[in-house]
Amino acid sequence: MTGPALSIASGGRDYTPHYPPNIDWHEPIDPKPLYELLDEPVRRVPGQNAIDFLDKKTTYAELSAQVDRFAKGLQDLGVKPGDRVGLFLPNCPYFVIAYFGILKAGGIVVNFNPLYVAKEIESQIKDSGTEVMITLDLQALYSKLAPMIETTPLKTIVVASMADALPLIKRLLFPWVRRKDLATPPRNKANPRFAELVANDGRYRAVPVDPVKTVAVLQYTGGTTGVPKGAMLTHANLHANAVQCRRWFHKFEFGKERVLGVLPFFHVFAMTVIQNMMLSAGAEIVMLPRFEVDAALKTIETKRPTFMAGVPTMYTAFNSAVAKQPRDISSIRNCISGGAPLPLEVKQRFEQITGCLLIEGYGLTESSPVTHCNPLGGLNKAGSIGLPLPQTRIELRDIADPTKVVPRGERGEICIKGPQVMAGYWNRAEATQQQMIDGLLRTGDIALMDEDGYFFIVDRIKDLIICSGFNVYPRVVEEAIYQHPAVEECTVIGIADSYRGQSPKAFVKLQAGKTLTAEELTDFLKDKLNPIEMPRQIEFRPALPKTLIGKLSKKELVAEEAAKA
Image 1 (cartoon, one colour):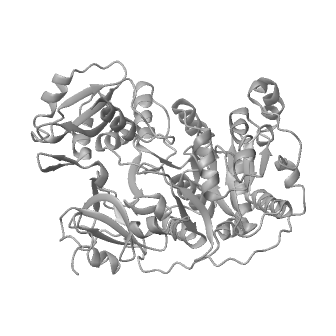
Image 2 (cartoon, rainbow, N blue to C red; image 1 turned 45 degrees about the vertical axis):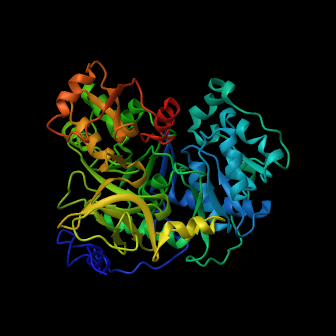
Image 3 (spheres, rainbow, N blue to C red; image 1 turned 180 degrees about the vertical axis):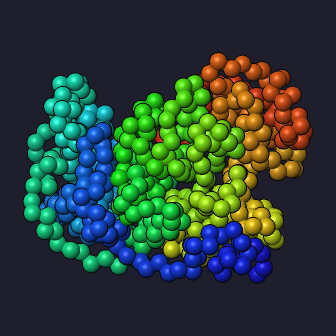
């Protein structure tokens, strides 16, 4: 077998001359329990702030003690090794405490999106067998969970006090200012309070962990291709990915970095890049419960974080806000974008407006998630997802025949092998088998690799538009549309065409105060797209559908067009 991946698989240095010289692709990564990531900062910087949540600060020593007490509390509650314990929480200190406490108690973390509707919550509880859930005493959260005790395997809802997570003045005012938002769970065995659970000496019973085999987290996929599946991420998977990321961001100074934690921690991107990696580096997480562009910008100005991770729609929002009103975000030295393709125009506008380097990375739930990233220093290629992380082997497989590796320079499906790749899908052996080929994880993403070893995502296999027998890649069309200065966001899908089979249709959101017609946009695109790629329809909308973490979503638009047809 020949192709571009063999050099990458053998370490990359022979074929990727721009691989960071101070990062050794070959350096081993020892499998360890995930909770050991906290050991180094607790030992070296115990008094350093680990979390700043709305001005309430928690040091590493305090965080470690709270984790241990929560682990003991769970064990006293009856949680045994292998039991699934759900987190139904927005970003808050309880998330971090419960996450590592569950792992130390021997349980498996199951992340739930707190914006899920009842049907989605019920389905995931049943699929995972979650019997214990951690949530806040907020009506918007608790009211969704309470009925689940009667209809699902859920037996216990541990209720944490939102007020107790706030600094003194805010804690005193919260029950009065937000009393309509508070839930009043009954005080019974099924609804223990978080504060009661951690009222102990923290001497939990250590549970033997085989990092390679023991599942740490069930992380459910978005369900864009059907019923959501729980990716089994082991202790070794998640520990390895945190180590890989920390080695890649080698310029971070231990105990001196501060990260903006606004991406939701229940999402795999934030869980690894913000929580796990940054805690392992002794950093301070400046945590916000949700993304609001003005609040995020104000936090950057006042808290002075040095690093930020976000999705493309966040950077689009920053572009619009900072263009209207200049803000001081000079403290941030590096930003990473992931979770979805980063449009070239969004990257360039952000860097022009802010002067901050924005690098693009790549990953997926099944790989814990990061597999590629542009270097912090050296060659940073716009439009590229960068180079494979240490110990990550990549092959580009033929789309029509995935048993074959494509020749260098040709498009192929990204297939991955590395210590961060999942153990499989929870209770879905057939789906696991379909997702793997020759021991590599199939991603469904089409890419090519250039002469420097940098990878460029072309599109997703499922999004590919077949127009008169020709392949049309929506991302190519989207990148062209983003070049128009009036465009803020766009999404391109394939729609039925009686003559060509399929044709591209573009959905466009304009920047505030800007005007543009379909005819004007078509004229603009004439020298940027060939006739097959040119959208046959252009629809302007005040807003485009997004996923619950803010990524632009195509499935709602596809469903709309199918219904019309």
